[in-house]
Length: 403
Image (cartoon, rainbow, N blue to C red; front, side):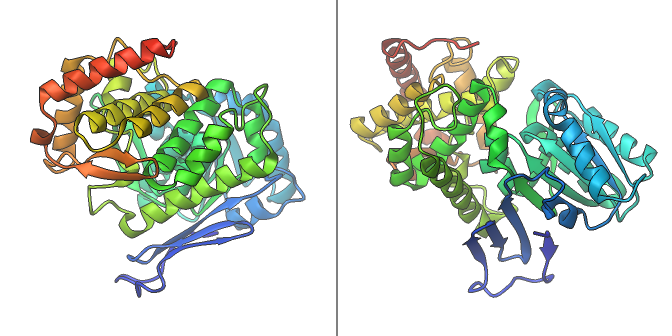
């Protein structure tokens, strides 16, 4: 369960990789970094030792967002009271939402930890979704030059994406995740039962990240989503529990396997950046009107149309990708931000951020993807035609700008 560094130099490549067991997944990267992502039913039950074991008897400062605090704050306090020494823990609420994913929020978390007497052997605990995990993880990476943190992932995005990686960060300088650190969680615990209280919109955002992994790596997973586009969604067409377990575990495994060889992003060409070239501008230029997963969905749809225009994918695969996103209920076009000027700016900013190489991920089939590496490989007229094509597809699907 712990995050550790086994050695200062690289480990034997034969030992590195991702291993799955009944409880979750262990990752050992070539640089020696190791950590786990565990599925823990009943994680806040005082009878369940997983969280107490992760804390290891250390002093704890815990953080929740307002909604999670209302839903699970009392259960967290009851757990800590039942399993830890009196006076060794505190629970605090921090603001969530992309507008609050800032250096100021991370600094406030550090200030609360200091006021609570957290020392270098202490633990910061994040209970919530990706934003709480990112902010608290970044605060832990800075506090006293780095302390342990534990995350309990309550959202689908948190369980299949944020909760299985090592990145933390906050938005700054009008740029998503401008400040951050690679700081593996000491333990990352996901309870599938949390998904039952999520709003439909948050489920869809999590499904966007799952579609991402299916498009680039796994046609079988994509097919499962086509058969059950209402997976994890309360009130939707019921999905067999074993299918949801398969989707959840497969998504976690695929993400960890893809991250493992390049954990700290020494190589800037990454397949998991599918959906993350245009989406930062879609989010920020739209003043975060679209959630992250919704912006990723629009990005994936645009990238599929670009691949079609560039002759890299056929019409059938493009139709399947955009069709699945639409059936899930995700947007595939946003009139306010999907303009030639803004999307060209997104390409320019990605090119600069990725070492002056574009590394745009596009599908070549369902389950396979490649890179378009140079700006010159995406002529502006091709981008314009792809945007027109996507707008037409969205209208045909009854799409539009989503709230």
